Image 1 (cartoon, rainbow, N blue to C red):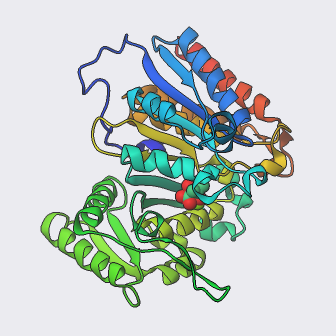
Image 2: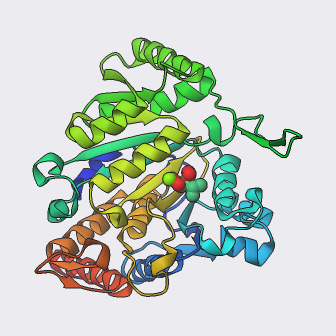
Length: 390
Ligand code: IPM
Ligand code: MG
């Protein structure tokens, strides 16, 4: 899949850049989380084992809990000892968090709070969410093939600010048996410009266009967002085409004419919503990886865009490709092993082209396979490509 290489041609901080030998094992923290997280992570482990036997890469993997599983094990959805392991790793691979079992858990101990803590503590402010339509899956979209064929959008979502973390927040008693819930949307110049710079930088290596989304028509934080992005563009990135769009219009345009977009940069909440919408356009939520990156030297977090899907957990129906491709992004952006990332991505493409599909992307004429069979199929393609190259 060359388009993944095209997405992120610039490697993030890497072991090699830090002068470490590739002989040293890469330290990975594996956090399967909840629901299908376990099944899809099992396939990542298979791939890691295969790489250890078939390449000169070595890994030192640690497992730990996040989300509901962490709440059950430690009484917190992201415990301090797990955070320490995360800080010491080179990359973190996550499955998914959440499930009905924890619906009545206190708000700040819900599975989602664990993921938010991990993002915030490591300062993983840049969330890259590609929405790509794979040629073999063009009919899987709910939109007409002509509208989505070749689609390749990158959503750059600000991940550690905005209404997700703004203070004050809470639910207060109004005294008459009624209550008031409140959150604060806040962005500073620095928060806006650092995510804007990531978006412009990535756009230069792709279609050279950034669409910046906010609600400057009703929110001061949106007005500031627009002004700061405009100023940054004029100062450092005037070679990139910049367009501003209200977030509600962007939601509509994504359905009407998605190919007008290249890179979309937006805040935490709008990014959450627009990235789900864009992912679904591709018809292959089970295929999409993501990366959350912070300052140089901080381990990146790699996770599938899909959720924990408790309704199908444990049934072998989940598609492991999004998590396998997230691992591949970790190879590329945290470990500087881009060649292996290319090989894994090409193998995923070949598996799809061969007509084997998990239930989520099943189509007429294809053969349905399980989660574990999909992992095996990817490894078989990798083995074949090594054999051919030898
Ligand atoms: C996402 C998820 C999370 C978010 C949840 C699980 C906290 O929806 O990564 O998009 O809202 O950021
Ligand atoms: Mg979301």
